[in-house]
Length: 191
Image (cartoon, rainbow, N blue to C red; front, side):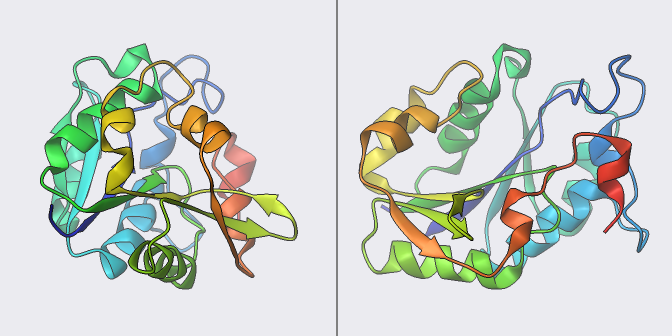
């Protein structure tokens, strides 16, 4: 098949962050000054040599920020149809790959150690691996090659949740509250 690939989903519109759609949450700055999407991508790039980032056609500068970091950027023409379409688009673009770690562009607080633990779970044969912090499952999630067809068929707003509901998931215990923290409102930008 191929090497593992990191997938960064950065094609959402972030309407909860700004219902008017004026401020893209991925381009907001964290307390240290880094863009939300750049922090998310940088951690993924530290563990996966190849990261495919999917953006909407009119991304407002997200693609430029991700390319500057070394991500392979691809625009999903159907991004507004839901996260599933963006996921399928990114997986198709990643081929050949032997597995994927699917991360979200609005989750900049996930620790590198968590990404490494999920990658190890794939290396050890997990079909699906998800991080768990204090009994709660979070993101990102890793998928082995046996789920390729299902990932390519993803659609709607659920993304890959259906896979997690109907297939065995290796839960990876982590001491990382970042797996539960996304940026949904301006208040979430504080660290």
